[in-house]
Length: 199
Length: 172
Image (tube, rainbow over all chains, first blue to last red; front, side, top):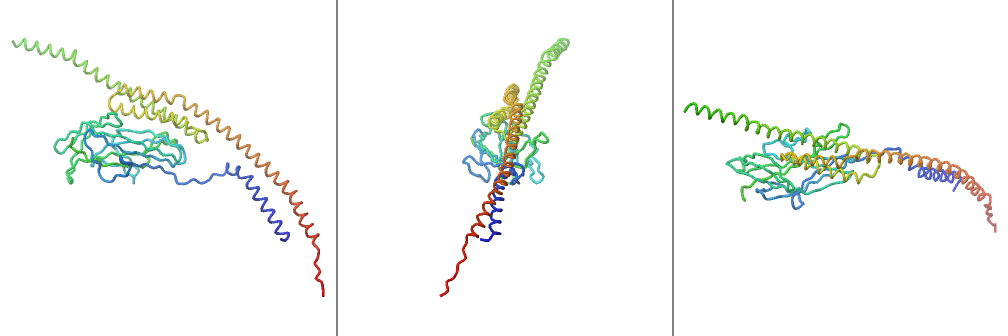
């Protein structure tokens, strides 16, 4: 090995050692780029599987769904899940325009999730006092996790299929610490329910 | 007979205006007042919860361990959800008491979180100073030891060269 190579090897060793010594300081000062920031919202059926199609619902017969939220926003976040009940003619959330459904919220869940944390909880619904009259079905009360909620929703029979359909809409809202208010996070899932007259 | 009818009508009208109407009005007004009060309690609880969250989020951002605070926030959040349900169900008393529970759960949480954030920031700055000073001392030592090491390496290299003996090929 000639002298030039020895010199270069020694210099490189010193630089490598210097970098190791400087690494903690550099780590404290240099911001590293984070990944994509997003949140997840999912809805699973009672058997913990994705259920496509319409869910059959009868009066006073409870059914459960699993509602999940995951935070990948890089910070601690405060989420609200708004649950809304709508008929087929009611407007759904407009994800293209980033607008929530204008229907009123019948239930809201508050969630606090750290970065890369997720939460999944079971919600048990039961339609109480459903009354059918010709082409209309009136839902007076809804029991959510054993708590009665007054809804007074009228659902009309679907002309094509001759069934009474309504949908449970779950919207994800997030607290904005800059504006100090909640805003629709443009995440929504919904479940189609076929209301049965059978007892 | 006609006078009797008029008299009866007046008595009923008087009874209605003096007894039934005020009672009915009082019930409605009472309900409305309770509803307004419950809604105000819920709004206040919601505001308290939001402010507590902002403080906890700032503490978490500063690098503090906020697990305990999160449990409190979750409990308060559940109370608030139930308060909304109770209000929707026109159970104003329950709604107010659940909103009060929510406010109670996060009472003082904001200031505790802010204190923790300040403490964590101070510790972080201390650690940063220690890291920078440590790195500086490390670099100075590297420079000194590196220079000394270089002298040794160079000396060894030259000594190795000087100690080399030329090989003479023996001629036959």
